[in-house]
Length: 480
Image (cartoon, rainbow, N blue to C red; front, side, top):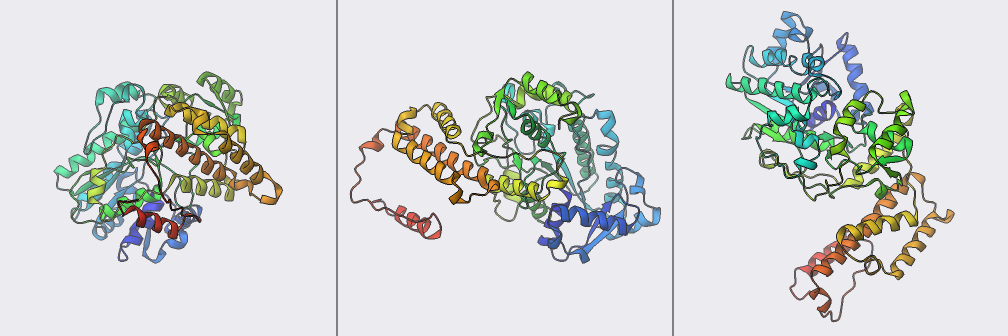
């Protein structure tokens, strides 16, 4: 989050000077670390380095480890503080993570209170809510997280054992400290971040859960029943642009912001829709296969976490078209319209970034497969899920055409790149899903078939600007 927030702040205000607190032996060493981080995310060229100041220090130490004069100078120069630093490891007790995530707020508050009051933008997590952490499944199926809401402590005690999952508790304690600072006059905003990933450059962090979970499934080519690519993994660059814009808005009205897309592109994304035809097995079987690899499994050291949340993360009752999270605060206080990038763009760019950085990526890279039988199996699941007859939804002529298309794409003459197989499969499964949705619509509204269509107009051509414009133009006339 830090590197993309830095980019967003510099882009949105060309007068800002940003001081970056970085664990380093010197300012030169800190600048080198910062440049490495920006290059890894492939955004260094977009950063105006002349407006950066590196402060070598540690957010968990008193005065960040700075001398009294150095800290005093920082207090005079700084007008706003963005507190992003945190230990995000999920398998740690509260006692182990308290020093960094909770008590680490003390020098931040001292910086905001000394010399003059400064704005404090604190970055927390949606993970303080058990319903979010558990993906709104099982007993959380009817839950909703509204704007400015606080988590239920009794539910947190049940979901987050102190000795196992301390991260949500540490972030909640830090939030309370920030809210007390507001009572002392500090102007604050709390950004509750969602599970993030898949930036516009495709950059991904290998240690961000559930990346190891997906890597483990790739490795053993099987997944627990109910496994899916997490739908609530928002793009980090979009989230950082929203947070930066709200923080720079002098007319913002809210205090707490849920930085989530309440209407994700699809209710869920299954691995088969990208051409990964893994075997679906009970969780216990998946666990045994992974643990047989011992230290070679990406999930080594994390089984206590996965075991605890497996009934929720691998539940098959999670599919829904919206995520029940209030986003009013970000919509009203963000001065520009919020646009969430398409799901395919996120996954395609992430896959490409991993391939470009293959030497430094610690996990196996999945390879999609273009397979007619696999597509038909997915079509059967769509038809069953939407309650429509398979044969009518996908008549023989359509299945034959799809089979010929798959054969043509797989032929040497097509020259299809292996890296694009998953993209092709995704496009075909989207069409199959749409067909089932249309069949369900016709089944619900049989009057559609009685509609007389006289002198039809067919718009042909690739779906780009001209065809879209013509469709919209015709739709303006009630005769069509």
